[in-house]
Image (cartoon, rainbow, N blue to C red):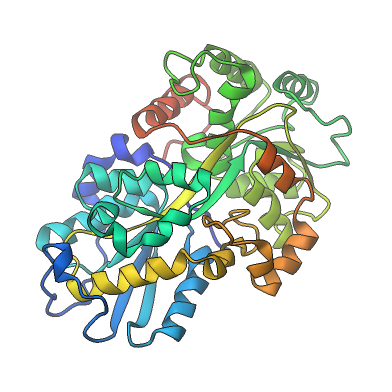
Length: 409
């Protein structure tokens, strides 16, 4: 069963140093490393010979972009002959990549990551400034939809957004148990108090829906400053403490949340578009599980990025740039609809559902929600907290909300 990777910044500040010293490294598959490109002029329009790319995926991104890469290889065998994928967690990024960058011997050519691995690598000066150095070679970025362009701004020119989704927060519920569906935080609290032990969510530092719920509440509750969890979230922290009195434990991963919904342990959870659609489409949850929005909320957005370790050879850099330009074309980017994992998924204008594979169209017709698209269009969107503020939010939640009810990782 595929495990969704955490995609935020807890490692960037909390664990970067430790990862740099103790993380495992991938085996070096290159016997004689090609010389690194020292500037953009060194990188040819096309590799001198087909290259093999080794991609590290720390965000569950292969599910979305793997088919895009396969299509590129099929259409451009003179550019890329083969691709190998390796999966890891975002906390492994620095420990894996830093020794390779420091030694000048890369065995990982590109990393697919969320904002956590992106920022951890920025902090350790591991990534090539892709947009700064090669923006004219990835010109399809000009076609980002507006919220994907906002997520691109968070990359500080080191990463390239490949997929995007509005995330949440939404609510998912068992209609056999929840007959009066909450539509406000106050109604949610009242339901949880009347049904102790039947509502829950995962530790935000380890869960996409958990951190989306955490970051979305300040907007819904009308906190003073949704961008400042330390000084501007008085209503949110007070609310979560009261809500927490009804929760016995917080799982340290979203997978257990889905299990709790599937086996009836819980009947109501915060969710995102992707975590609502895919578990039902893949039979991890009953298809009868329902979802609902809050009456008034702001989408907290999310994205995946491609980053390249420093020291990349000219030929491989050329291949990567051609691949990224290809991924950011509407017909190709539409593959990101996939099984709803990152719904909608595409980051590019014109990458509409009718361009997606028929299997995706059929799946989303059956398991999607007919009100999602209107809601995505209507409701405001906000980018996630910046790295240092997100780490503060996680720390405060761990100390004041979750303490004693989750296992430290």
